[in-house]
Image 1 (cartoon, rainbow, N blue to C red):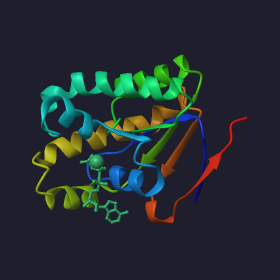
Image 2 (image 1 turned 90 degrees about the vertical axis):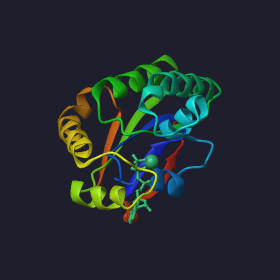
Image 3 (image 1 turned 60 degrees about the vertical axis):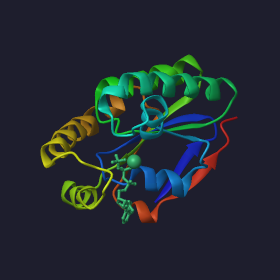
Image 4 (image 1 turned 120 degrees about the vertical axis):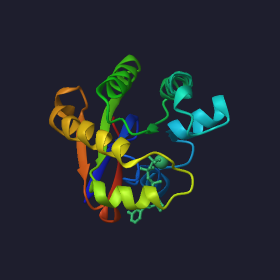
Length: 169
Ligand code: ATP
Ligand code: MG
């Protein structure tokens, strides 16, 4: 599967925990392009799993994303982005900086994502949390194309993806 991604874009990864977002981001984008909510939680609260730090973490993430976009640098947001308000903020940020918002959905089966999550020592939440994320993801898949994303790529075989960098102009 070939994904054309404009050089100057804000790429929102969308996927439940364990769907493979961070792995995908590492494989296909440069480390400095990727802004991860975990890294920003760690930065502001010394704990990447501290959900109470999410508001501050996203504040900081959006701020840095804006600085990069203003300088003409691509941003890839590694966060679940399964909730509408999270995606709305990213579309607004892209529009404010005149770049294309693109969504890449990692549509990994919930059972697979759970197996992977359960095996991780650094993930503590229960099955119900993942189920809730999956419900939000199903809704997202219906609504994404109407939310202002220029392109929505739904990936079911992440190992078969080739990213082609597209010069916007
Ligand atoms: P979180 O939202 O919790 O940060 P994530 O979506 O970023 O999760 P990853 O950390 O990328 O998920 O992957 C979770 C686990 O699944 C890791 O142990 C990773 O090695 C494994 N994994 C990710 N992608 C694949 C893949 N394509 N094939 C096999 N294993 C994978
Ligand atoms: Mg991750």
